[in-house]
Amino acid sequence: MQKRRAAKVLVFALCLVPLLWLGWRAYNGRLTANPIEYITHYTGDWTLRFVILTLFVTPLRKVLNWPELIRYRRMLGLYAFFYGTLHFLIYLCIDKFFAWSDILEDIGKRRYITVGFLGFVLMVPLAVTSTAGWIRRLGGKRWQLLHRAIYITVIAGVIHYYWLVKSDVRLPIFYGVLATLLLGYRLLAARRRPVAAAKPTVPGIRQPVSK
Amino acid sequence: MLIRKTPDLRYSDVTPPSLYFDRRTFLAGVPAALLAGSELLSPSRRALAATTKLQTVKSPLSTTGEKLNSIEDVSSYNNYYEFGTGKDEPQQLAKNFKTSPWTVSVEGECAKPRKFSIDEIMKLAPLEERVYRHRCVEAWSIVVPWIGYSLSTLLKQVEPTSKAKFVAFETLYDPKQMLSPAQAGIPLPYVEGLRLDEAMHPLALLTFGMYGATLPPQDGAPIRMVLPWKYGFKSIKSIVKVRLVGNQPPSTWNVYASNEYGFYSNVNPNRDHPRWSQKSERRLGEFGRRKTLMFNGYEEVASLYSGMDLIKNY
Image (cartoon, rainbow over all chains, first blue to last red):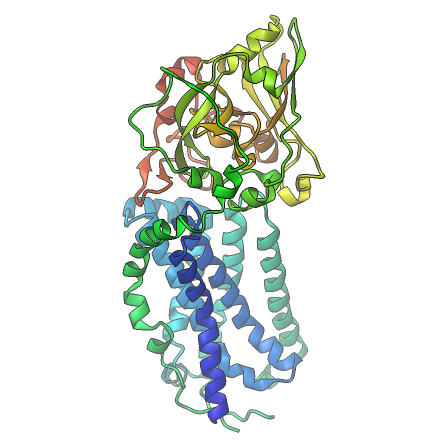
């Protein structure tokens, strides 16, 4: 138990490293000549990375036969939401400085912002219902269905990135390939096993975790 | 083993409230931290050591009433895809770019085509210092004291014929020193073009230096164009060829995505880029956004486009 706790604290701290690194760069004046753009892109990058990391949990549990990984899924997902919130707030409060008409025009007219906003908004209910209480209230099946919204978020995130870059699409493509593999794995897994046998991986609900 | 019913972590633990509520204080500290750090950790200072001082004369065409950006800003935040697609990459990757010897071939529809060495070309006219606003298509802007003279001086040297209607420019492409087109994401060599009357406009500056010295490589050394009323990518860098032609020449970004980047690419707040607004811009070093001005505030070029629909001819 002690060891588990320590592992969790370690993962929690590791997830904060990108933010600390950003703070360090800021302290040393290394946010480029356009710091607002830099912190926007930086937090956006980490949002997408955490969404993808979260989606890695289930396949890795199966492939590596390492079921305990489920213990970190919620934390990774909430960190995705945390960095996504920073990203969105930077856009809202710093980049656009609460220019609401510009922001609404952006969300309506600029498709890369529309799709990015969609991906972010879909994370909100997932973050809210991430507690054990909400899993009980919704019931495992419904909870899991709701949390599949993360699939849309990852696709939205990749498209948001792809549409935003000018010509160098290597990174958006890389994330796109990862997302495709991760979603493809789930599609295959769902087709391979009969629906009745499908075991939802819901944390917090009493279920045996075999070692 | 059972997973515990109570999560180890509550929602409020994940976004530490202190961090969350302090974010503005944190970000407000950014400019101060920038100032403090830039003195010690400014990589551009090294790059600038390689430049040489230039003697200049004052110019009536210099923009007044604008606060200059720092040379650190201008030499560490570059779009020069031959040296990387990240803004901070050209400063590193162009460090050893060979700008000497350098020849510029001025050719095509003209009576006296010839090649100029960089020294010859720099002696054709007194070098003027001209402060210009520079507006990138990506909605950021800077104010730079460039050094050069009007492009028309060079073009007159070769005596364009009546067949010359456009000017085509070409950047050096040296795969040994530069990235591949696949890495840069755009076709290379980089090419640009102007209508002859645009090229002859006195504001079109053939540029050799900035901030009192020759250009650092990442800013387009040893010779580039600066067209203050157009988006930055029209101001082609490290020029090796200037060709007078009869038909509208290709320009790199227009070839790459013609619906996004037009041949003219005049700064125009009324014509949005299909993916983002051009109504406002961020002046580097400033917190808020500024309204973008038609022709970037250089209304004196408006007559070049009288009768033209600048929404269609973007």
